[in-house]
Image (cartoon, rainbow, N blue to C red; front, side, top):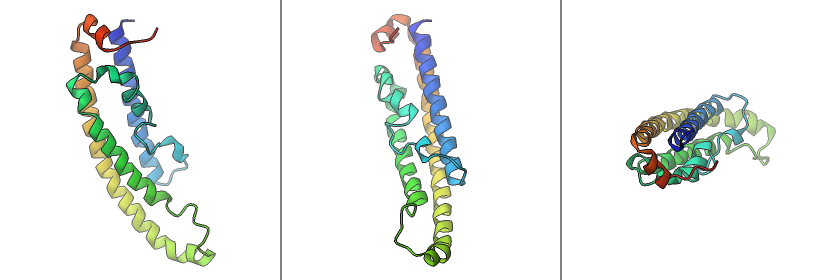
Length: 156
């Protein structure tokens, strides 16, 4: 397999990881049983972020690569807001049983609606990231194999 093919494979895998992360975030908001660890809050902890800030750094001279970082940071900032809304009361042992039963339901519904609204923003940002990733793949495919070798070290 050529270095270019390996890079494209890694890029596509990172992209799939990003898409999966967005699906997990949606599932979490909709109350599906899911470990919140499946949707890392920090941009350096998700599968895509591990590639982007790791091996993907070899592509940092390409224009599309440079356009990905800010939307990726924005995406995780938005998710951080969602995460705080969804889990802010999880460890609150101070409230009594009836306060939990009666007082939180209305607040939780408002928080859930806010989280859903924020998720729409997150989806929009994800679309931007995916468009940049498509352009990045096109840029990589247009490179000569020698240029790829200079940019990106692929371990055997």
